[in-house]
Image 1 (cartoon, rainbow, N blue to C red):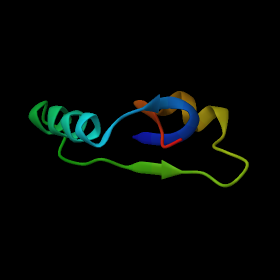
Image 2 (cartoon, one colour; image 1 turned 120 degrees about the vertical axis):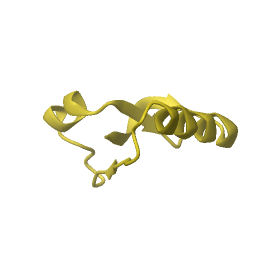
Image 3 (cartoon, helix red, strand yellow; image 1 turned 180 degrees about the horizontal axis):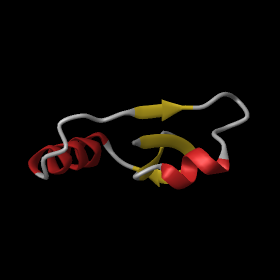
Image 4 (cartoon, rainbow, N blue to C red; image 1 turned 90 degrees about the horizontal axis):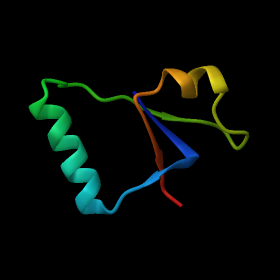
Length: 56
């Protein structure tokens, strides 16, 4: 599960592509992107996330 969060890591398009490819090679065929509201995502959900991604 990948959560979009301000405190997440910023990746370039190439880095995001490589990240997704690595996941596929590791046998993870499904990805879920969690997008929160303007208030963000709950701390509980962030703690369960495999990766925090930031677009800004």
